[in-house]
Image (spheres, rainbow, N blue to C red):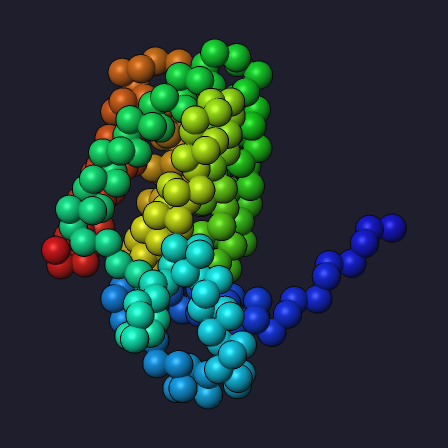
Length: 213
């Protein structure tokens, strides 16, 4: 007999609702989150709402400014390009680490299989997307990448959520990530570099164009 899942707290439910609104584009990057109106809409107290928002700040989806409250996080165009360039280098290091031991490919394949079977819930799709990138880093068994992942995750969660909201075309996302997984299996740096450029830098530029930057 399997143990039943722990009941979700009201704070977690509120966090899920706001996260979904960001992923669906109902809350836009940079948008101020009016606590009174939001608490009323969600049917919760302001302390419960603030707890949920603080969790989303830690996750990277929201920001909190002194005396100005909460807002949906936003990276400007240069920050997005800098992030893409940094990810290109670190993802390549991770992939080379995976190649050091062929058995590590299984860790990537498990995350890819979960990505492919994510249901139509956009929040589940988003979680599977983030998990795939985490698995690539973890499969490298590189201790420095392990230390850097929490920083990268907070940025990846934000960018991937907003990208998904801007273009919720799951077919395109699967194609791009399928090419990346195939490139990892190819053990060919030329193929990997091309796949990383398409997945990371080209995707960033497409997102900026959709956003109007």
